Amino acid sequence: MAKRFAWLLSLLLLWQGCAVVNENGHAADGACEAKLYGRTWRLLTIDNEEVGLKFPATLTIARDGKMGGFDGCNRYFGKAEVTPTDITFGPVGSTRKYCMGRPGEVEKAMLGMFRGTKWWHFDPRNRLVIFDDEHRLIFAEER
Image (tube, rainbow, N blue to C red; front, side):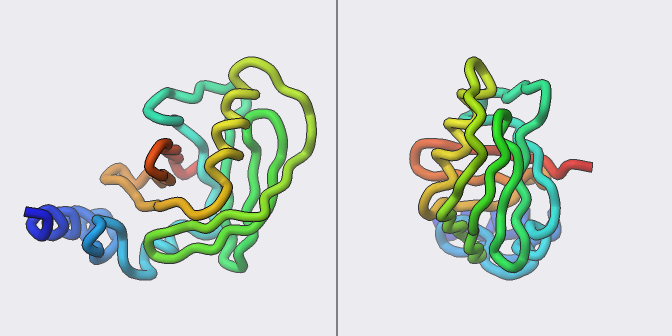
């Protein structure tokens, strides 16, 4: 059953422009990585909850391993090592403006996810999904 699921998921990824999937259902080639780099990704949801900020939270990852963006409150910057299935973040720093309410909540969630190794893929709508066992961030490419 698991092999059948992986096969179906690989067909879906081929349809969206990324190639094969490994046994965990994650993209397993460099095509998806290339699509990730050098683009600005706007945060849409945190754990299926819409973000809805006046100034959108963003993420950019460069091919040289630098990453950064805006977390809804502060600018952040750091390193991100990307493999076909994982992103290892760190160290990550940020400016230190104090934020309350929703911007502060979004900042806490984003910076919490940008520690250690997380899984990633593109969903069927070409949105970037970064997740672990507890949390999930979904980003859309900013145009």
